[in-house]
Image (cartoon, rainbow, N blue to C red; front, side):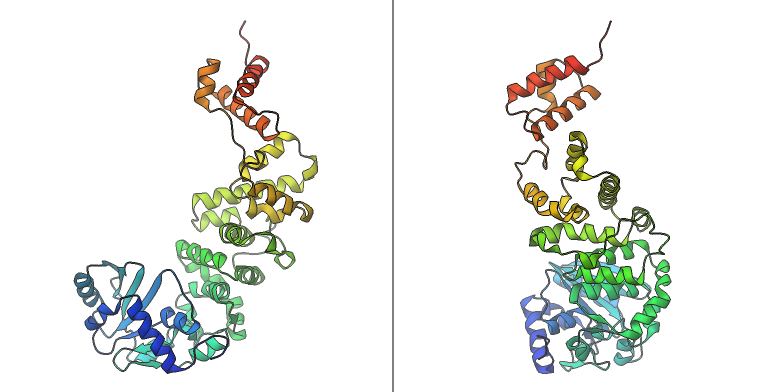
Length: 405
């Protein structure tokens, strides 16, 4: 065993069979015809000793994947989905286990394995003989933490695999084979042939990995998503200079993915790739305040601008923290972590209904302005009680409400 990677076939098979029993998907095995085998990420993760919340199981059968999948689904009463009717690829969902069944596409198992994306995913467990088949030395590549492909054509058959290289860097801290690197540089434009939703999904995997920083740096180095001209108005940072130790574990998991997305994609790209409206809106906010502070010293912000900044960035501030001067970051994080800090977490002592009832005003712009004013007064500690809020609201109306002749 090297680097905690299982290399002994007997140990790997024992772990596989134990896992199948523990996760209770062995009930489908009797329905699989002779010549069926397990392949892909499930075996890879067993070898790496990797535990995931959701299990992705890939099974290859000689023929009739749809009929076999339907029969299994009916017998174990699970959800059944046809992913690709023409190529006969189906999915069975059993609790938190996703079992994909597909037809063998080559005349032999080895032919199928040689057509898979990377060698680390080209290791098969033959159900009939209960043995491993590793013709491309995928186990050795796992011990070397090396990502390589048997054939460049395997990547071109689905160009999304170009992006998947960076996902494996992010998830497993793998090195990319030099030949594969050269191929990526020459063929990155082929990603334009891939459905936008698939690219967005892969980007999300990249930015959520434990080694996301290294993967994102590579994506930027390869300039995967565009040219330097395209990024001239970007707000990318030099990731080599950033130490994320200021964030705790929970903050890293929750806020670094958005920060990393902003390091490789601008708003226009997010829209083209059909990212969620929430991700696009948050990116716009980060971009807005980055350029605002780039043109205006943060220490010179007036009360209204500073309040507006915290109001708009309240839910994503740790994603923005690395755009701030180094000497401010820890203090801002400390205050943001304090949910009672009314500047970093703007709130109000009154709601709209109470203001309307006590001040006899209707819904409209004035009500919104009063709420904003009271929230800002509370943030700057010029307001403490309900009665003070009512008094200040009355004062504001006298000074700012339109006068009628």
